[in-house]
Length: 353
Image 1 (cartoon, one colour):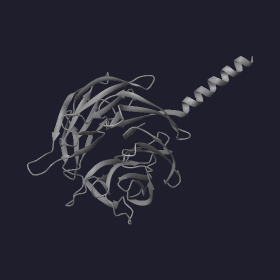
Image 2 (cartoon, rainbow, N blue to C red):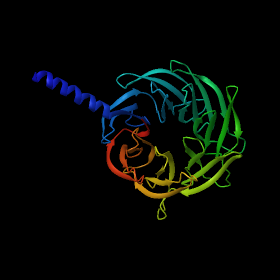
Image 3 (cartoon, rainbow, N blue to C red):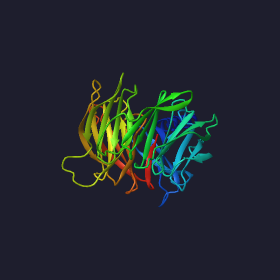
Image 4 (cartoon, one colour):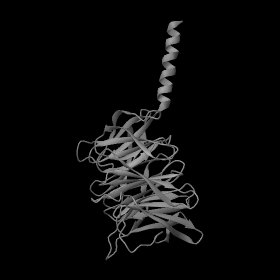
């Protein structure tokens, strides 16, 4: 009887432990100690990261993205020529290579998928282009169905990120200081708005976050260390706010990187490389404007991308130069961050739950 009791106790403990854990994938640069894409076990109750493993060896997977059903993972490779690869996620969490296609530009730095999981878009920083791909049912990438080339005779493009929203596609171009809006027509994306905001300055839009209804778009600017807030209206787009990500007393160099909304969309977070911080903003759900409420040290050097865990209780930062991942708790009432702990990771640049 005791044997049966201990057996069931063991099973109960095993299932509770596994229910508390989820997988965190880490994209990296492989010009040092890293070999490719890594995985951690992440405890949704405590925020603990454990069991670091190499999920697959691959060259410079600097940005990674899931399929909506989380059966497949996609990664750009900042290798010579530029490629994007598809992988199948196995039962043990390790990755199986499916196929690889050209990114249609040098320096691919971002990939994302639509909600249906049948299209992907890749941004090529050095190539100044973006490419749209159809995805087969088996998760494999087809050759690009569309390629947008932005370099002109007098302007150098640096396409940096792109996101689908319903029948729209938004692409941020750091070089041209624009966020393009495309609309889907006859299975092709056509340019609808040359830029959703206007500027005579050089902010360098890098990444952006959309509210769930698509009415508000928050763009983090790498070069001006700022966030441009834009509202979608019946007649187009309207800039509603412009905020610095830096403390008034900070005088050093800085380059912003990533931006995310909290799960409840009441708070906005942006990363500063240089000040080495996460800027925390409170967001008005009435008019969409933001107000800075905290600057939190990342406890590392050069915070590239960061992410919020599935529970919405933790924020994790990939510190590229110090080669560590910092974990913070998110205060549900205020949105503010509290540092919990950090773990070493080889050249982390992208985090994916």
